[in-house]
Image 1 (cartoon, one colour):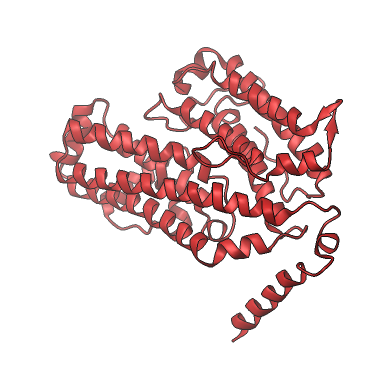
Image 2 (cartoon, one colour; image 1 turned 180 degrees about the horizontal axis):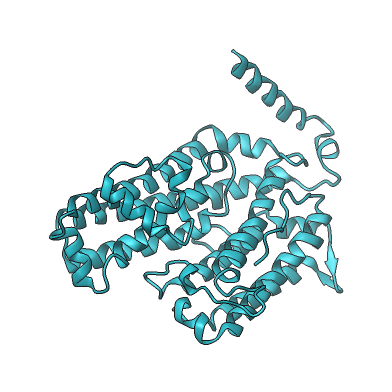
Length: 372
């Protein structure tokens, strides 16, 4: 009963933002936030989750085939499917809102580096609960990276772990369980978006710390700052170290090694696409943070702020393209190149966290206190 009352009050609150003077009551400008949220939901977020779940389904099928018949051919197929799903995840990672936030989806999906000691313990005992926070770093894409690429030094050794090893059955079960959890989480979040949450998200179009635009904009900034700048580059190059102690073992996809660059570029691109309101798998752009800034005619340095922001995204992408595909070796051979990339990403964050959110009346909801 109390829950029903809560939903009624929440619905009334959203409805109150739809009065004759709704825009003036909710925000300090006349921009149609609802149109922006509709574009985000219908053309970016939901299609991104649909693509993600489709790729995970293909990956899960490949896992089942590999588990049934562990051989080189099936190993290569499942690896390819894992890389595709992992790359698509870089887009979905941004949307830590609604059930994704409640379920802590980002951390359960991509906490790296993986805790291989815990993974091996879980496999050995067969006693684990992947829903527990104590297993955050023993599952998700990083755990799959270890299970497909790191349990042996050669493909033949990896195949043997699943085919002839005395504990092969447990390895198969763990790979299947970790993969199933990825798919089930994706399905749960997609179902929620296609159910009631889409309308709730769009209706919450006022300006406040709990409003959809404010929360997801903060998620976008958090993702480019903490997940992209810090985790993918800052930590492994020991950005603040004096002198730095490079930790290449902390890069994303450390066992595959040659896809870290792909994942970084996908993450930066996903952030820029969301800023521009770019539809999934299309060049079409709808209402967005870019169009919001343009309608308010916000400038910086004599040009539109949206143009400045896109220039900084483009500069970061151009710099990222110069990196080695293999971050594990590249950071050890030429740390400076990765530091420059980190700095280019930081330039994006600077203008998003200062100029943009100030212009739109959005308050940052987290602190940058851990460094990178």
